[in-house]
Image (tube, rainbow, N blue to C red; front, top):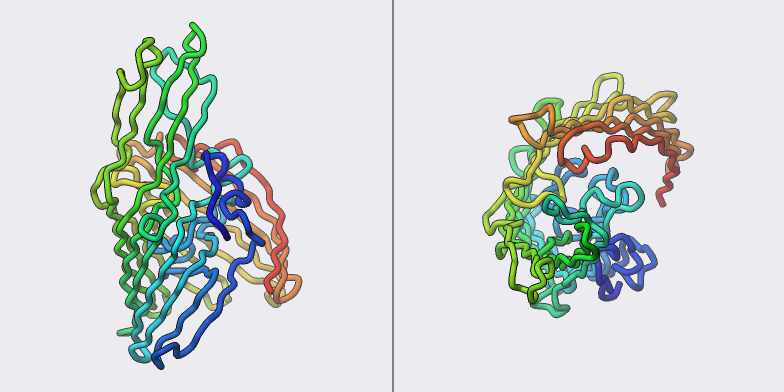
Length: 381
């Protein structure tokens, strides 16, 4: 709650700065049924407005800011203060409209994952980084500059749930748009002062989910249309003893052209109760622009034992390809088996392992060497 007080990218790792007055309440709202019209329901307050039919990996889910604190817990979002209206045309079809008055950026991963989605600009040969600072340029906090608007038509036909949607909103992950290089010694050491900005997108989405025989299937796609091209300007003037802005280099970090993220998936429950899930995703949350989208093949298999007190997950993880012309040097592998003990209907203990491997510049390939064991307690109420 409250206007974010973020100044630099380091503040994106602190929820207390992003949400200055926050009790970590996921949702708190008032819902009015039959408001003005019999078929109109209105919900006002802090809400998690989840869109999409895929399993956690949802390209159309762009209303709430991402919660990337645990980057391996895919699909987490924070709630937003919003007005959410649903008008029911009949039992099968409805219209939804959402208005979120103020922008909130995504919060970034913590711990060893802190650099997964961030980095410093590449330096020319002969230069080495001494210190890096950045400043965030947030959109102005008025309704025209910082608000998000969304609309969706959803229905059920021929055994499938489906929807088409539109969002006019701001990407919660910033782009580097300006870098000033300052020399600090005669050996090539430099300081970098960077400026980060956010871009607004038009997002057109569609999804469907149903079953073919006994196999559950789903598909989801979102076309992102940036409102403007994002250019990063690097100023080398100080390196040559010249006034600022004299020697600069521009590079395009996001073209003003549409790019498509999508996911298709299927699941199946075997006669013994074991469950298999597979998804193919093109474009993860932090990937923007047609050339930056990687391919993710995610799989999970689980089996419940001892009257469902134990859930064994021997197969979970994914294989990621960032360059199909040279897969051997541009891939990432995640293997994450897990064992869960359901203490009660509402509480579960989980013991898991995360193993990483990979090569290249994919964000998850950079986790190689950070293998870990996890233990968690989850309680739902």
